[in-house]
Every structure is written in structure tokens, then in C-alpha cells.
Image 1 (cartoon, rainbow, N blue to C red):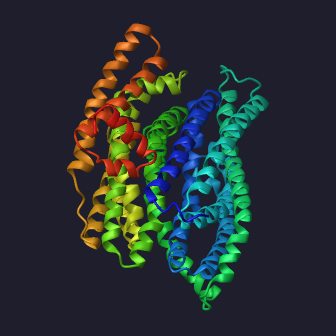
Image 2: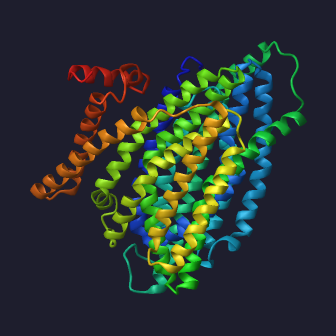
Length: 548
């Protein structure tokens, strides 16, 4: 647990790289899983996952961020004994909450999902208990401003998830259907969807278990250093376990409520969409779940890949901002906010444009057996704008938590949730937008969160977000990049008729064009570029080609 690398952009870069790799692995294994269980199976899995996710959010998901915040404050004051007591108390907290949450999900599955998806949701139940312990360990190392341990555990988690998801889905389908090929028997296809989704859910639990075992091993390796620091701690006074427990509850609860409210939209949207479509409009259940599988299991999953860096930056900035605020260094906090916002926009905006212009070839690459390419492409194109909004709202949520405004994201999320729900109901009932209604309200929700969070930060710190270099110049560079990428793809595909090769070349050229345009527009300075992961290499390349 070295403190030498205290550059939070660098730590965010390490975390982002792991997050990006994890999401790519997650996207890759979705391809064979989708082929095995079909869009209906993906719909069952996504529906069950939404409710598993919301219970996880309430019980355990916010633990890493919350724990990193409170422990980092103790570490900044060199109160190592108190920091370790916080860690021990946090473990007891998640053990108790995890048991209750897992039992609730298992025995109450029928209250959340349709009967066909109940077995899938029950498979998720034990994972919640394991994730709580994993979250505390990750938060403990994040508090030391080290993302390496969490990053490695994320990659291992996804690798295990990938292997078990594919193997278990295929094994259960073979056991119940007898073949991986599509049959003409509706009953067998229903079994394929349900048991295949259960197998994929088993992969989620296996991934968390592997990550937990890895983090336990890392903690045991660092245990001698941890206890050495505790013995040398000159602070003789430490809070009682009762006081620490109250501190944990006081800090964790706002994090939990904020994260739950922020992510509750997908669960509510899922419930409204399935209930209104099946019971109000009379649509077939399999069609509804197939369309929802395209939206959630394909469109949302692809659009979430670029958010890896925003999530990493959000996790990295909490302990950094918390320590600066604890030291009353508000100017330093504002500088970090500006640096973080500019960095994620440099990455999020071109990703959004790229997904918009190359949506169809991306769908064809990842889901070659997709029968409804038009709907999948349209959903992904429509979701591209939300990439920017979700990146900003994810970061600003963590900024508000880091500066002590832990309740503000809850209020903002509830307001955004109410507005999007009020809009969604008539869209589903009185229009033929179908899953596009979910796309619209997802974008609306994230946009409202952006605005409300920015207003809250401005009121608290007096911070005003710079616009031209943070937003306008990356957008202009991305627009040029998008036009070039689209033209290169269409031209190459017309010549060679290879989607994979045409897409790969167009992406490589797009990255080069964006990088060149951004520097020529002075959207990033040499010092800002050097602060990014591998920034020195980017500066060297820019200077070699006389761009900088």
C-alpha cells in the first residue's frame, strides 16, 4: 500500500484501464451467452439483474466509496489505529446487512419479478453477501489512494464471470433442452431462456467469489505493514466501537441512498415497461422481454463501456477531495474538480460520437446472430448522448460526497427520478415508441442529474465549470473525428465487404484524427496531457508530428 503514487488522475487511469478491460470482457462474453440463451433469456437475466442490483446498491454497493471516504480522512491525520477500527467495524456491518439482504432477495424474489424470472433472481441472492465483504476490502485500499488492488480484482472478477457464465449457461441449457440450437418447441425455448439466464447469473456470483479471495490474499500480504503502522501510531485516543459504528452508519447511509436513488431508474423503468406492455397493451411476454433484452443487454451494455473512466475518476476523487476539504484547502479541491471534469470529457465526448456514427457495425460485430439489427442499432444510436450525461453525473455525485454534501445527490436523484417517471408512463401508454421510450427517459434522467449536481457544486464551492476547453473543443474535434470515421468505414466496407476490418481501421483512424484535432484546437495543454496515464508518450508523439 504505497503512498508514493498520489496523482489521482494516474490512479483513476489504472482503475479505468481495469474497468475498461472488465467491461470489454463483459461485452465479449455476452456474445456467446446471447447466442445460447437468446434475446428472451437476456431479457429475463436483465430483469432479474435490475432487482439484484438495487438490493445490492442498498446493502453493499456503495461501501467502497463510503469506506474510502471515512478511512482516508483518518489516514490524512495519520490516525492508523482509528482507520483500522473503522475497517473492522465495516466488515461486521456488511456481514449483518449482507445476510438480511440475501435472504430477502431469495425468499422475496416473487415480489420483484414475473414468475418466469424468479429462479434467475434467486441465483443472484448469495452474491450480495459476498459482495459486501469484497466492497469493504476494496474501499480500504482505495482510501490509501491505491487503485491497483481493486483494479486487479475487477479484471479477475470478470474473467471468472465470463468463464462460468458461458459454461453454466451452456451446461444448464444442454441439461434441460438437450441442444444449444434453436428448436421449434415453445416449451423448450422457454426452458432455454430461463435456465440459460440462471447459468449466466451463476457467473456473476463466481466472479465476486474469485475477486473476494484475491482481495483477502492481498490484505493478508499487507497485514504486517498495517499492524506496524498501528503500533507506531502516536495517537493514543481512539473512538469506541459504538462511536465508529455510528460514524459508519452516518456516512454509509447517504452513500447508499444516493447510489440507490441514482440507479433506481433502471429498475422502475423495467417494471413499468413490462407491466404496461404486457398487461395494458397486451403484447406477448416473450416479445417484451426480447425487446428489453436488446435495450438493456445490448444497447445499455455497450454504451456503459465508455463510462469506465468516469466511474474510475469518481472512485479516485472521493478520498482526494475528502482529504483536501479536511485540510480546508478549497482551492486545491476546485483544481482537482476541474482536472477531473476536463479529463473525462476528453474521453466521453468522442466515445459518444463514435457510438452514434458506428452503431450498426458495432452491433454487427458484437452480435452477428442478431435478427433485429435495425432496433439494436437505433437503440444504441439514441443512447449515445446519455454517455456524456452519465459520465458527468457519475463524477459530480462523487464530488458532492467528497466535499461533504452527501445528502445532495439523493435529493437530486429523487427529483430526476420523479420527472423521468412522470414522462415515461404516458410515453409507454399512449405512443408506439416501445423501448425507445426507455432510451428517452434514460437520457432525460442523466441530463437532469448533470444540471442539478452542477448547481449544487456551484452553490457549495462557488465553482464555475469552464466550458470552451472542457466541452466545446472536444466536441468540435469529435465531430471531425465522427465524419472521418463514418466515411472511412463506408468506403472500406464498399471495397472489401468486411465489417470487422472496416470497423477496426475506421476506429484507429478516428483516434488519430481526434487526438490531432484536439491538440490543434488547443483543447489540452502539454502539462494536462502529461498528467494523464501514459501522457508523456502522447506528448512525445504529438511533438514528433509537430502538433505540439
